[in-house]
Image 1 (cartoon, rainbow, N blue to C red):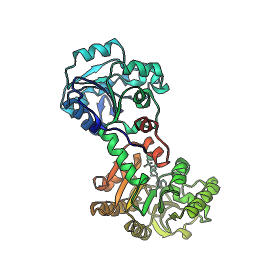
Image 2: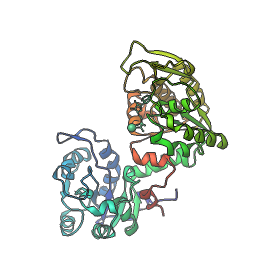
Image 3: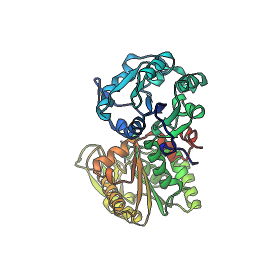
Image 4: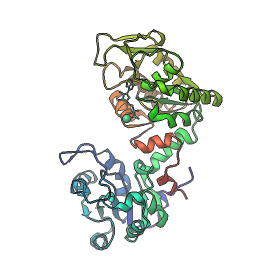
Length: 399
Ligand code: ADP
Ligand code: MG
């Protein structure tokens, strides 16, 4: 990652129009915002610019309107929620470019905030159309990108604008990039990665990239079953992708070559039916799984062994739960290892970065999310970063 400008590099912005890309793709139910995490993440950047006297125009997408005006996906729906969190009045402008935006800027005083309409109402957004980029840029003096979660897309407001206006990373983008750099860019070694979740096939590129980057690769979840099966273990009825055996062999060979130790569970929690606290629940060695059983979690002794590995490490990156954590007691391994990672992070010996929709839910469930060094809520962008890909929205910010 090259250097990028941050808000620290801004000169005097009083009276200037700041076009600020944020993530306002808020989960809603019956017209009410159910989770305002994304607004809270963008708040420091918005208020810093407003308090410095800029006219702050927020750009964001909402849902997937596919280039058409869809009234149920208007960003006007989130204005109330944004006002509540910011504690400021927020104007809504039903366009992203042109005379209506120009008029709005004329009405705004220095330090005022406005939300422009859903950028994806315009076909040019997802096509990164230079005409749309120019039209939006015409009303702005500078561009700030504070939406890491959209940085894996090369869209007009996530990438294009950075090329035509002075471009800066917002505070949330900056925090994310600094945390990711610490975890995989220039990490303090040894580095451990925990990769779990349902399927190997959804995270093949993540695994392929990580074996070359980390010292310890801890594999759990359904994907561990695929690895075990490829090594000749009978995993019974477990979720398993048997056809991926050759790919698993490749990954294991690459790990061996790179000096990365791959940790697979040697003890597992199994059941004959997938239900909460099923009567058939038992813990056994991986070689003792019977044909009618499913592996649903890593066993407690194996978790202790993994904890011992973590204790030797200085950096941890985590994506994917170790078991079917939504259903008790198959959350036990994820919760136990998460607590170890949290304790090591609190003591200051481990830099821990985690991301992924279910991973964040699992760490919240374990009650340790606040102890991790950094939790990414970016989903797709986080996974692409774990695959070692350059994110276009980030690359465009790099000076
Ligand atoms: P993330 O969203 O954090 O990237 P994934 O979506 O890849 O994570 O995986 C999470 C899902 O994997 C969870 O729904 C969990 O129940 C499932 N899972 C984990 N271990 C198993 C297992 N042994 N068998 C079946 N499903 C599992
Ligand atoms: Mg998921």
